[in-house]
Length: 474
Ligand SMILES: Nc1ncnc2c1ncn2[C@@H]1O[C@H](COP(=O)(O)OP(=O)(O)OP(=O)(O)O)[C@@H](O)[C@H]1O
Ligand SMILES: [Mg+2]
Image (tube, helix red, strand yellow):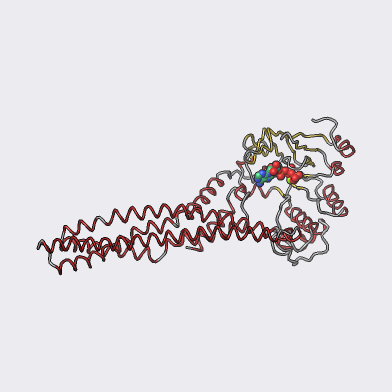
């Protein structure tokens, strides 16, 4: 069960809308996964099955009680509602507290991942003390919630013992009265009490299952929410085959991240073979354009059209395979150069060599490990690997997001050489900040701070290269 739950969660991560990861990091997700699956697994705890088998045997005990004395039996039945309501009270409390514990654990996991990612800067800026205080605060918060849960567990147990003993005392008192009244013998009373305990214990244990499940429900809810979220995200994949892409068009596309409007009725068309530079201030929405083309997000309004047909109608995997994209935050796996370039495809050594040479990457061997997201190589080398990866994909459409930002001038020159040579007939949409590069392109797509997108002809590029702004907004 544990294995299949982990696999289900990971499979969901592969399918769920990319926005799901927007404010979650890997340490937090792994932490949540372990906590939730550990909790859900308690459903298979042996005690659950033990209680169920005991319950069957106690039915016989109830019949026995009625045979000995029906009046005392009615008294025993008083126990059930009392136990039910106390368990319900403690279960509600526990579910609430468990929810709080999960929340604190998630926040702690997020903080932990964030702190470790920033460990270099934490040291450089001397934030160790602050981090120590913060970790102590998080650990205390989690431990405090755990302690409250333990107290609730003890209180539930104490209430059970109290109820059982009270019932025993009540039976003794009422039984003594019946003995004095000569309607019950002493032997029958003790037989009744010993039988009744055999009945009360399994019933109590059964009602306690509610208490046990109250500790599982918050984790199970989170788990099923993820599966639901995944099912909804999958609805966006159509089934139309992807043949040749002749045009990508944004038609009245508006898009926001929450309240933050990024694009407002964006309209433009890129035709096959065009070389388009995308420019705009930081945060204006350039990378978001790529996110929408790659169908990692869906427009709030309007449509992204491929050959005039809505992009959502195409088979998602085949659609994405039609683009070779290098994102600003494209990730390198902690594997070899070769694996990072081929990305799961079977590729011949000669082709890898060609791609690496065209990307200008000479100083790394095929089997060099690059480290997590290229931590063991330089930023420029990282970009060259990403460029080689895109070239090897051998598609007609290329999306490059600031691909030259860390490249040296020779590497950048080399890249534009490839753009005008090997990629001469391909479509390239490239986000750039260096206005001098605009002369390499046929069109310039300007993403404005006003959330509008404007397409400019290439001749205007010369003006921009010289002055940094357009003569006329087209
Ligand atoms: N995953 C996200 N969640 C929430 N807001 C986001 C997310 N990604 C981007 N944004 C916001 O959307 C806006 C546009 O971001 P985008 O990354 O598209 O800008 P950009 O033009 O590529 O900027 P830059 O030149 O700095 O790369 C910004 O205001 C940014 O804060
Ligand atoms: Mg960007």
